Amino acid sequence: MREWAPFDADGSLGAVGTVKLTWGGTGQISETSVTRADAPEVLEYNETRWELEAFGGGTRLTLWHRIDRRFIAWGAAGWHIAFDVLERLLTGQPIGRIAGAGAMQFDGWRRLVAEYAKQFNTETPNSPPQG
Image (cartoon, rainbow, N blue to C red):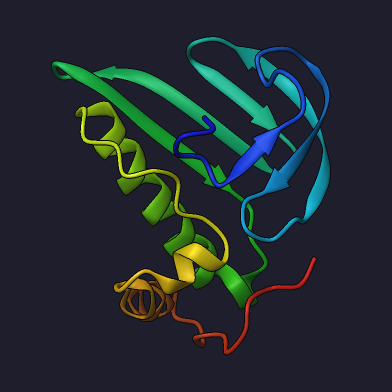
């Protein structure tokens, strides 16, 4: 996860319990309760759920993440970039993690935020959410 996820964990996300997540580029730390860890199908912590399922000849990843509506376009754009980084890693063309302020420097950041704001029918925020 250190190569693509927008956070680092101080412990295992593979078992029920408490870990601290440090969000890349922000230094923001959140204590997180892993409530379900059924590898490799389901991971749940706080208000986030990851699900993997066989699909066609590959695997489908579904992510649910509750984000304050005022910042949903930022959150969706951030996850979009993280998944682009993951895709490059999985295809053997790693580009390194892009998170936090680094994601906001990405050439397509403003476009992604605007597209997600339109999709979610919300305003485009002028500044990122604060801790």
